[in-house]
Length: 39
Image (cartoon, rainbow, N blue to C red; front, side, top):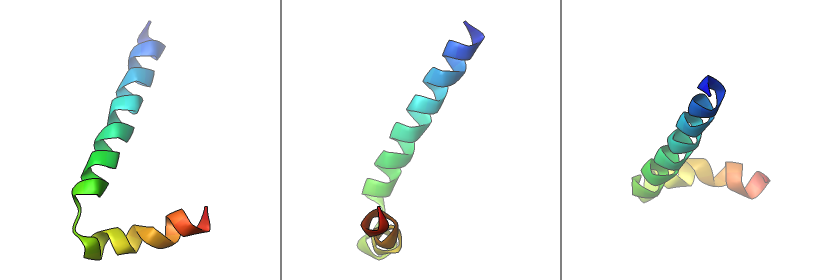
C-alpha cells in the first residue's frame, strides 16, 4: 500500500511539472525545446 501511495505521488508530480512547463513563458519553453526535438 505504501508503494502504491508513492507511485501515485510521482504521477501527480509529473502532471504538476507538465502543467508548470505549459505555463512557462515562450523563452523558457524554448529552453526545453531541444530536449523534445532530441526525442
